Image (spheres, one colour):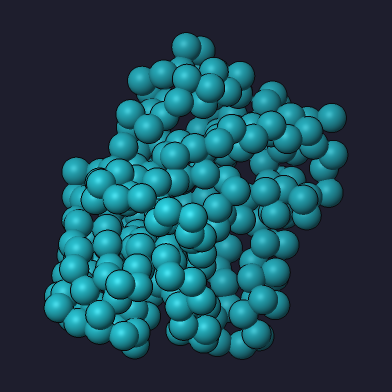
Length: 241
């Protein structure tokens, strides 16, 4: 049975890499990276820099083009399912062509809004999976703004931009990820927002205030940053007063 290490590498700061992650990296012989295009080359390079600094033995770096996801045809869940199946086939192909233990370096943590474990579950090759947790973007966001996710005796809800648009705020404290449409703009202007992009990297941007006072500025900064870099990864905490 082949072995796969799924290793969380943090939100962007190379110092987020844990000792456990470094040990797991050095147990691997091959690292698979899904190439998402030239605009995200910096994300691949950060992974390669981590390997160059911490690996103690030779290894292979295998880069394959990430399958495209149909964003116009099937329903969202069906399109994502097809995309995962296509990725699983590439994982199988990589194992068939390369010997040794496979490592996959996951941005943030493999358990939070990442598809790697679901893709592995679709593989045809029998595998044994070891998961190494990593620091998430919400953790980094809270640290950089010096706030907590929840208030005393309170709950926190973690969701996506899509769900926020459909459901609104379903808790007093909400962490939002994967929001491509500035969904916070539709909320009560008195809601507080703690927003961050490119967290943990030299390009990090932080803004905070109420949706009414700073929401339009966040949208403007977000649009400009994405146009300049070709991509953006951001998250935010919403808090009812």
